[in-house]
Length: 458
Image (cartoon, rainbow, N blue to C red; front, side):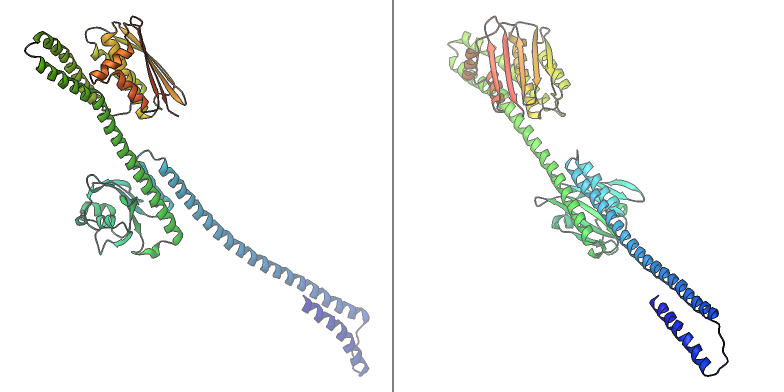
């Protein structure tokens, strides 16, 4: 624009001067003043018009360049947002690992994150069984066929590459044309050919599983640093979830073994000790005090019969499922019926609060206390009914077992149990005390009996 204005200005000055000079030299050129101004005005009009158009074109070019740059920037930002979205989805899956109800759910979420969020076309995950030394519970995901399962693989170097990688606990890139994944042809066929990345899942230096991913190249160049960081975090979190579940399972099994051992010690073992002690005394009394020995043997027969019931109940009490409120009532009613087969004995239950939400140890301990108290009432109280009140509060549980029968002297009964190495009432108290609770035995002759239990749960 500036060049055009400068040119037109120069033209406007030189053109009249040129006409004047030519006229002075005698050349016959005649231009009227009106024509001169018209020509100059036309020159300026053309200059202004084309200069304006030139300015507009320059602005349009700059705007186009700016829009192109903005488009590239928006495209880049959109790609970053998509990548961030996938990362957030993966992080969401990582948080879900913590709340997964079982190992199968962890496997499914790991496969979902690897295929849908990270973009791998095929993936497989297997779990390590330390007891049987094998990789089992395989789940395979293929975009063209969905999920599939295969049989377990023995966890041994002889079983092929994946077992060697699991033992080495290091990532490995494999091309199936050069090296088979395993010695199991069915397993290899289910996965299919191609390049595979094998990732061991380790927790506390122990292999808990294996993740296999289909990749484009048999090397780390196929996976970017960001993708690799997300993938390793995913595998690590899944390993933590699987390891935690396995530890919880082992602890639950150990707790159950300890409970069974404690029950046997508190019931069967002590009763058998009493039988042996009594038999030894009877042997010393024979033959001079045969009548006394006979009486002791009659009592001993009752003790042996009770031991038989205790052994039977210990077997029945290895619960295959959790102890719910309904099972609590049903099992106690059946147990009391077995304790008093010669007469009808009923139990009236009043339960308030979330019994099923209590810890398993608390529920089973309350069940044991009710067993002992109701068995005593059914056998010795001389009544046909007892009442059980159970109140579950946020911080503690209150249990009351009450009957209106004969009653007894608690001090005398506890002393008698100690002397005979029997753990009925005393076993109830010790069981509750180990959980930080209290167990009070209230009874008087002809006034009935009440067992009051308080157990903290907060």
